Length: 353
View 1 (cartoon, rainbow, N blue to C red):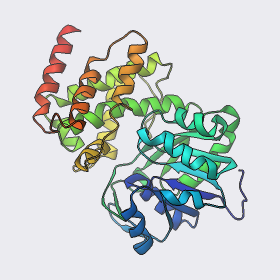
View 2: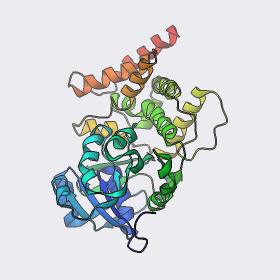
View 3: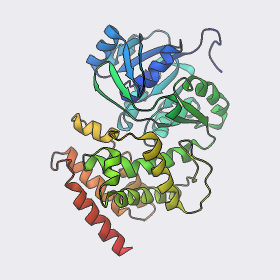
View 4: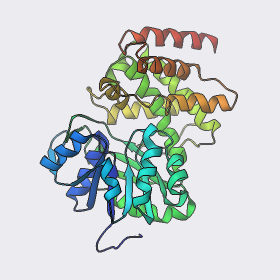
């Protein structure tokens, strides 16, 4: 531990949307010194007026917290000991640059995000000050000051691990903080854990958003489960090509199969069973419904780029990326009719394999 044990750490959450706000609210109710920082002005003003409200499956919580607009980060006088970055993967670099001047010299930055953002953070604040993380929570936010979290603490799962070996002994102190919001494990190989999460994200996020369906409905749509699994299989190939190991995540038992595709199925099934509700919309679909871009390149595009760098193709992910970018350029609607094109692509790929 690097902070005063009596005073406790100064903590900031940079990015307090659906995920960040619900976790940070738990920190506030635990009596921790917490500051919300966000880029949505109405959200910050609503929090200042009414506190942050979190609707959980069987209860509602509200916490009064200190909340800052992005422009006020430059006014911070006392540096933060721990900063949780919970912005979109594509916003990671500027977020890390913004928080670096107000990070304590021995402070830590934790990227609670999709994608392989730990390397971006490490490049900016230093490997010794970076902690990689995996997060598994379903939540959504449609109005300022209120977030809807579909998993309570017993169904929320996190993994933490240092990027630099010398920092690993400090990870448990951060895990202790995060246990105010769910189950937390400390991992020696956080890079492999983040790859395993990217594998399941490649299967679920953009594919289900393209057809504009809740995750469970997309997986049940005739032919779509095969599409989604193939995107995951290719992502697992990319992970292994990149040197990652197949390791258990999201509370699953130790890996008992040497069959990479079977393990992809197991991860995906666990997400559908434990972390997804009938109405759960993946974060990418929420982004598109709000008119924002999603993490197309940072998830499925990452798979394409990694396999391409090894002289291999990822045809299902290439199609997912193509269709996702067409949607974001306004050249295609995200609608259930897109399933026909995805399924036809799957059939063609399967026939050629």
